[in-house]
Each structure stands twice: as C-alpha cells, then as structure tokens.
Picture 1 (cartoon, one colour):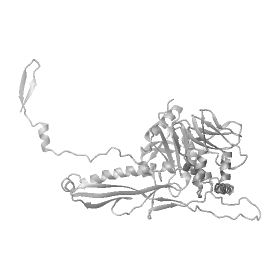
Picture 2: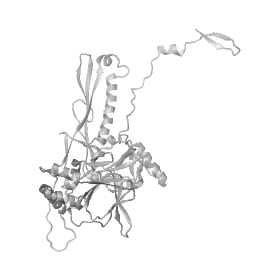
Picture 3: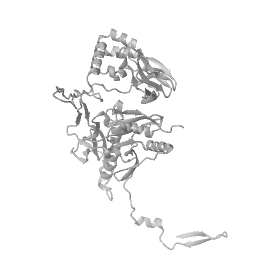
Picture 4: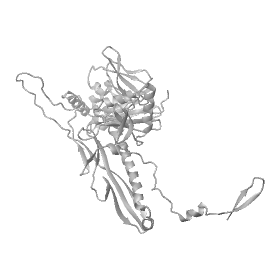
Length: 473
C-alpha cells in the first residue's frame, strides 16, 4: 500500500507503507467494554436515609392518642374565567364540617358552597383586622398573605404565612360576638371567598342535621386538650398534704391510619438466543436486570415523595406546612421549619432549590456550615444537612418545596415500610420472578418492589411550600 505525500512545490511523492496500520490491527484485538450506562440514576438519598420497618402482613397501622381537633387540609377551587367557584366536596376539609355525612349533608354543603362571595384584595390590603367582629368563613383561593398579631409593645408580629387553599374563621362563626384575634394582610393580589355568619346561621336553622353536627363540634372544642390537640392526661404536681389526685386514662384513636404496601412492577423480556449466545464477557440477563432495578428504585423514591395517597409532600399535616415568606428559600424559612419539631434529621430538596438557598445566604452575608453524611459533605443549616433529590417537582411557574423530617421508630419519626424475604428476592423488598418462555422464545421476568412510608406523629414531617425559584429582584 502506498501513501501520497505533498512536497510543497506542487509535486506528489508516493511512499510505500512500511508497517501495519491501526485500522487493520484492530481486527485482531479485543475491545475493552464498559458495562451498559444509564442516565438518570440519582444518589437516592431518601431511600438511603430512611430507617426501614418490616411489615410482614403488608399493612402498617399507626396507632395514636385520641385527637379532638380534627385535621384539616388546603382546599381546591374551580373557576370560569376570573370567577372562582367553591367546590362543594372541598368544604368537607374544613374542621367544622369534617365528618358531616348525614342523609342531607350533600345538599346542605352544596347550599353553603353557593353562598360564598368572591372578593379581591390588592397587595398591602387588610383582609381582616384585629378586634373587628369575626363574622365570615374565609377561604384564600389565590395569592399569598400573612397572619399578623400584636406584640407585647404593640408592634406587629408575623404569626403565619398563608397561601392558596388556606382558610380561617370557620371556628369563629360558631361563636356569637367573637372578634378577630389577628389581622391578615395580603402580600400579593389575593382572591378570597367569604361566607357571612348570618348566612351560615340561616342554613343551620333550615338543617337540623347540620345544627346537631355543629353542636357536637362545639362539645369537642370544650373537652380538655393538650397543646397538640390530644385528649389531655390529667396530672397533679407540686402539691402538699393529701389532696385528691386526678383520675385519668389515655384514650386512643378509634380509626387509626393504615398504610398498605404499594408496588412498582414491570415485565423484563430477554430473548433466549441473546441469553444463550451473547454472555461473554457480560451476562446479558444480569445487565438487563441491573438496569431495570435501577429504574424501579428511582420510581420507588419518586412515589415515596409524590404519591397522593402516602407520599411525603401530600401527607404532611397542615400545621407542619410553612409558606416561603418572600419567594426564594431563606434562612428564616428553614428556621421556621426546624422550630416546629425536635431532632430534625435532614432536609430534602431539589438541587436547584439548594443552590437558591445558597444564593440567599450569600446575599445576606451568611455562611452555612457543611455537614458530613456517609462520607459526603453537604450544605447544612443549624447542623441539619440539605440532601439533594431531583424527585421533588418544580412547577412550570418555578415553585417547589423543601421537606424536613425526623426519622426512626424510637423518635416517633418517619419510617419506610417494606417486606423482605419475598419469593425470588434479589435485594430487600425487590424480587425478579421468572415467568415463562413464549412461543417466540422470549423469557419474561416479573420484577417487583413493595414499599410505603409513614410519619408516626404529625410533627415528624414538615414541608416548606411555594418556594419561588428564579425570583426576580
């Protein structure tokens, strides 16, 4: 074989090849191959940090003390153009109407929903004022507001932040001559739905079943409760002599929450010709299975965070939800999260959210510490690490959340649920079961993983909501 070489003066000289070239030499070599790579494998810190509880029966029941204050949730609304509509069934989320399921309850709640009046408030307007008569049930359909109190010296104090779906006043309207003990100020333009007390009283007068339900609600409020709303345990301390000691017992919830193990599954198919002939140097079935397991574990973490039935974002108690005060996540917001629980183990946030928090710290001249977890260093706040998870969603409007939790059974924290020792198990709680060979010589494997997650008490889990990324300044 000859090579052509340009002499530079227009002439070309033919040179004979004197050795084997690399293209031909590669025909006699063996390539060094990597294992099949897969984009999208994340550290899965939630799966690594959760303590896992064995659930042999497939169902985990969380028994708690009896709580008189009914849990509530944020409401959803419908709209036709700019006109907002109260969805009747959403009103059942109000503590006042929780458990109202008599024969005529649907028609009564539908009547209440139609009586709400829509009002608009500009940023800076007061939605309610301290000391004014509390004569409305108020639902915040859209916008951000702050609940303000009065300090010891008359200065305003921020009690809470409110966002879409929050509500207040439903307990005040059952009391006559009650007055607002706080003010609510709109931080952004707010759309509010308001139900006057006089209308509510008219509906009660027309519905004996609703009147009886409201009476039972008042009785629950009068029963002794501790600061968490649980049935009080009567005790005596610091007494002298021989006083009569209080008699008590610890009451339990009659309908405790039960968590059934969820499942993520797929059927892996491998042609027998592939598994028989092409296994050197890597076993084809093992590589197919390895990548399938990675995908299932990614889906498992996604479900633990986002599943509407048991996921962490949807199961945090309303009292443990904090709305970002200004938009981006700030040290103040994280302090508010930490103050609502003891022994917080870690934060969980999207990497972009962690970056936004770092920017806020830089803007304020605050330098967060670094916390070591399993040999890795992470940004931390008050000694609690911020662990990354790309499973926490970021909405189209740039809003996202931060989760914080206490973990473990001994600390009444959040626990992962699984069952091990299942047939054909290849890792804890995950099995690969060979099914059959089809008439096309394709072998099928059923790959399954079973899991769930449970906060043992409400303050084990907290969420910072309505974080705004890319917040303009």
